[in-house]
Image 1 (cartoon, helix red, strand yellow):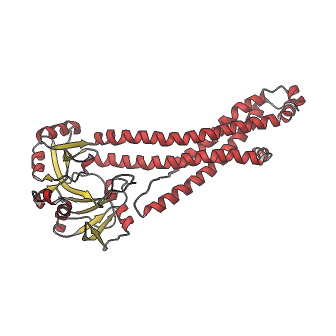
Image 2: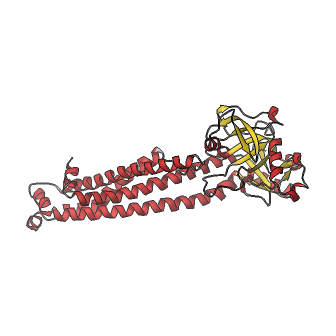
Image 3: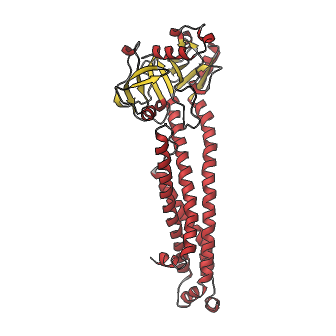
Length: 391
């Protein structure tokens, strides 16, 4: 209780110092939570793309999210490439006419695949919160399985109807969260997806295509022991007009950008926290100047230098801990409010976990102790006689 009693001597100055730490920890918690969300999405994407290759038209978009049509005949050419175990064609398109301006991850997509074409090689875990998976018997019908974000955004449950591109679909299943692409997907039978894609294509393009021959991406599953990068090069050489993306490509293209963004976010928070640390140093220096005679008395009656250092370091650490606790609480409130306000639209930007909370609190306490160490050391080195004469 001694540190709290000493801090109460100058309540206004103490509160202002604690406020500086609070703002720094608040920034660290908020930006750290945003970095956590980004890292979770990237990690989920890395898991999703691991040990498989995604093909798209070489004029399309990154990661198989192109809506540029490909012929299903390309799948047969890819299957003939040495090292390919299976090819799963898919038809994908944006659920909305325009992608949202703010979105952590992939935009909402409509996805149709040829059931069973992966030959059981897809190991990405999908668990159902309710309902069932699509089956081969669903071909020709308008049913859908919704990802967790889509179901939450539109408040849909099994048995409800959802309109996709102007066509009503019955919801037969809802996925549990995966923190990657399936969360933002409405999965439909392949023929239904082909029908929707034809409706969205410009008439001049649609006129030269056959609906039953449409695909926008293909997932390639590898035979055991085959290197994904080598197989991707083989496919691009053997099948003209396609672009292949491996899990390593995903990590390089998405992961590098994510690392830069994380550095910026954490850097901003640390700068704010450094300002708070400087305020602790200033507070402790002023406190020592005001208590010079007190320090002299303690030294004169036998108080050791180490005890003086411990007292002032404990006082500074207490400032850091209190500021960190308030900053953590404030950050948690901001993160919760922001997530809840954006949850209905599928825009969840933050993920505050126990690691971030403990790190923030420990960091603020250690920062306070370090910031108070130099003034404390100066106090311990004061000559007792000189300190007693101090006015």
